[in-house]
Length: 108
Image 1 (cartoon, rainbow, N blue to C red):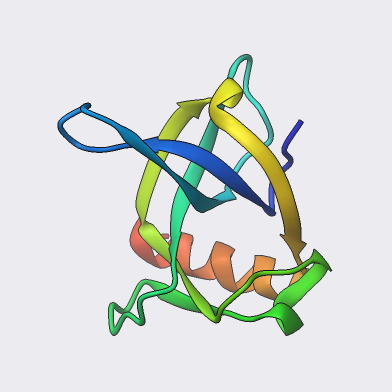
Image 2 (tube, rainbow, N blue to C red; image 1 turned 120 degrees about the vertical axis):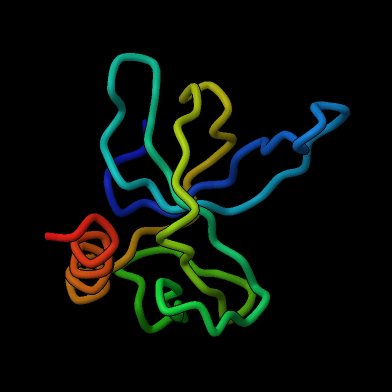
C-alpha cells in the first residue's frame, strides 16, 4: 500500500480514454479508503515554477532511472488499485520542499 512520499508506478489513462501507459507519480497522501492523491512525475525538464527537480540523491529508498521533475500543479486522484508498484520514497528534505510548493500553489 503506497504511503505519502512514495514514488509509484501507475496505470495512467490517456485523456481520451482510449488506452493507458505506465507512468511515475508521487503520493501526496496515504491511501484514503480506496483512493490516493498523486501528482505527476516527468523526465521532461520543466521551467514551470511548480516543478521540483528529483534525483536519486533525493530518495530515502529506491531509485529512479533519470533526473525527473515532480509536477506539483498536476494533481489527481486515482483508485489505489491502479498503483502497480512502489519504486522508492523521497527523503524528508524533499518532502519539505514538496509541502512548501503545495502551500504556494494553494496560497498558504
